[in-house]
Image (cartoon, rainbow, N blue to C red; front, top):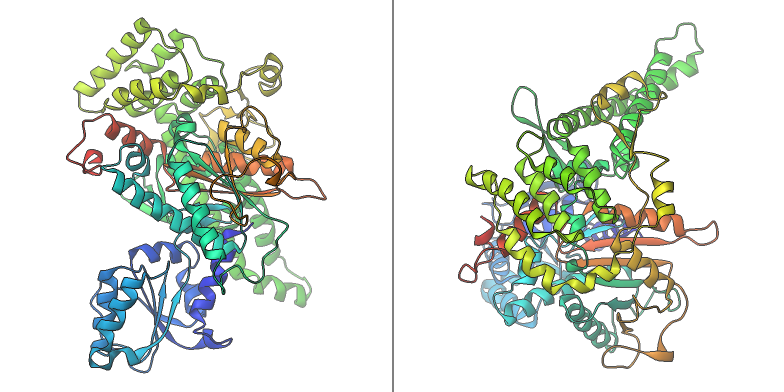
Length: 611
């Protein structure tokens, strides 16, 4: 299940203008903010140029007339965008216009487009109008985001029932786009009584209604037997993982520096920042983004050794001319690899400084113990909160919230820790309103505790490696790798499935038990109004799945699901799990949303509470 490649195929057809060889036709590409995020997750500028795109411009920017060049618009169907397109046609900016919308035009907008362009004959410049069903950002082969900021706040505290329904409908429209792109009708499972259930019901109805149309989008090319499983989950299933201090490369980069459209701004020693592009074109990133930080250092050393070996070949004397010619021809690739190694060395070095300055590994260790139901002593927790202990006030608040979520904290203990946190708040370095939300949330969400399995004594012995979570750095790591890890213990994360992964595993097996029995089951291909039960359900296990979290996802859960899929696969059967969410959040971003929910409503403006 490669969602990114499927979306790339759709966008490449869009750029072909309806012809096999039209990729080499010079063209102008015009996009709005929403579609720019879709494009940037799939293409680099050089790749667009190979498809004949000579000029790229934002729809809202002032643009001049360009003669003899067709324009490809890739935009969101809104009244404002329709009006801009109509003005462009009226002003004759382009001889030929190809309109592409990221999701279908409504009947009202179609009428508006026709009305505004027919006046003055501007409609003659519109060559084609297409609904592309690409209203989602494919960050990776099996990672999708809808880019809906502050989604946990908006789903937890909607300003009105109407606003909630509109928000859920937008999610459903984007999920429909993903399903159309995959060209598969899924079985849908969801937990009852929350926004995920509402989305599942509306998506089921939307798919069923579409399948009754004569020329529906699924009438050709899809398998009727091998169907994927779509699992819609509510973020309230587990609030600990979004707050958790991660230790894998991609999650660390996002948590400390922030990832946006594959780009990260890394601080420089002398001040300022440098931007790095971390996409799947980067071989090192593709291979190590899910690796623990110590393994990144080993990877840097391995890539450096390979580079040095190939560079040494270029310096050899007396070699055969053909061998030397091959070496010279490989020079551009060699230089690309050198830039890649330097980039990841710089990123890892900047990460290392943050890890050491904030004693980041200690926060991870304590949170791992809490999440795996092996709570540390109160004295350990109290010591980690004290001003003398390294770590930012926000690091300590994240640890304390996880402590509250995973452990029955005694009132006296809570009072001592919160008094320290309040001292940070008085200094203006911390916002504690999230604790008010936490108290209400714990009372409302006690049922989620059943999804957290107790850690057995045998597991503790196996995952601990006979001792601490941390071991000495392997002697096999080269000098450069050792330098990257100097001052940080070589952390060995526990190989445990997170609550989300445990639930997904049971649903993929398709065997009913006490944990999955309450999950609703929808099959849009069956003639039924609502959930399906009994003998009408499929009974075979699923090999492909899409897990979608309402209210914010994270790179840790995504990687944990990929690890499960790898374990579940066999030489004969490959299990593939894609992960998506309304947005991908870092720990600081999710903490900010919890803080917003702890504040009184601000006149219906949920975004104002986050400022």
